[in-house]
Image 1 (cartoon, chains in turn blue, brown):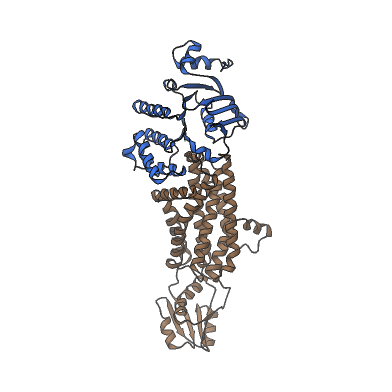
Image 2: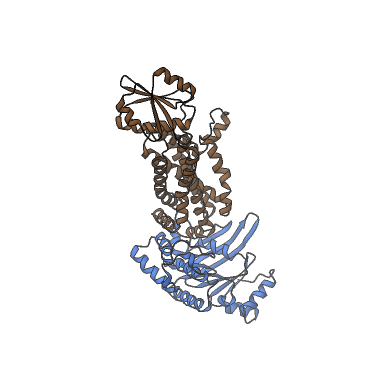
Length: 245
Length: 336
């Protein structure tokens, strides 16, 4: 099987609090995988585990077929955190240039890629503006650009479209689909239901437990409802019920 | 390699954040100037007695502040007893010697400074002795070296600590740790970026204190720079390390009374020789103690490198220790 992320029996505890409880999942190469859940469900912790920032308390995670042992493996991943992790004093271009240089892209390649991603998130005209003058949506877009600048094979996006207007959100999703067709694996967390529908497969997360995982259509079909919202209410209403996966 | 990129980024941020740059450079200058005004007010009239001093030399002595009076050796002694002379200059067997009244460190310092130029021009040796008291220089001359070290330490600690903390609070640390960068490369990048900046900072602060405020300086300017830069690096590595234990900028400020203020007490601004050994042991655990000691050695006693090398190595040791601990502390955020 061609899986990009493989989690087995993953448990994450902070002190006595269990944030992720026995999660098994496998994400295929080239799919858009959504993590849906209310805030506090453990979505961010789960993606940090996937990004190799966190080490699970229990269980195993393999990325692209291998456990994360060397930093070099992280070259293939891109991560967009929930907070806009940007240097406020620096311009958009300088931020991207810094992150690109960490991935040791050549100067020429860096310039080309930065231009491309700025174009993609529609920030080309603001490239020389310091980030502190940016609006919330602009910062979000720049964060996305920073996650994509080194052409990773897998990108992890934590709530990528918060604060972004519908038009731009659509164009970001178009970009994500384009990336998918290039074979890039995309992992997205969201609590927006209509965004969840755009994913190839979805995992529903609640209180650190994975309560369902399937394609959006199958999820709806299984519980015989018409919207993702209803699916979520169905599973969320009764947490004792663990579906077969 | 990535160390270089982090360093470059930090320097770029400095260029944008003019205020922090000003804090690190201008604030020490301002405070040093204020202290200089309080501690180093020049006496309007310095009374100098001259015994057997040749006319040619006397001419060179006259200045706005110096009132020179030629008198006999016995009369000079009487006047020193009365306290109506600040110093007496003797000339015997082609040698000059200066006898300072010595009860007022400010006057003693001022007279020595006045005569320093004479010494430099004539290249004659001058023995300096004290009629009263000890070899006290002006108060500011004595605390100046420690103060230069302290201000460099203090402001680098604050700015370095806060910028590393902000890396965490604004999420860029986590973002960075999601890239293949090594933990050590982040820490060394900080050392390098701030290190380059502190060369400039040390240069400005040391030259301002020495050449504009006229802090007594007998030793090598180069050594002064070396020691201030090492102090700055120790401050930076300590600041970035303790920032791991702060949740926000305000908590970083809370470290000032805990970590910075005690160091001032042990940096030689207050005499601690008479205190118990355990008090002195506390002082020996503080970087500023060594920095200030080395600074005083260089500036007041014209110390050679051999005489300050112990302090230099200890400062390097502190930096190495704090840096290692910091690289280790980052494990909390990413195991690899």
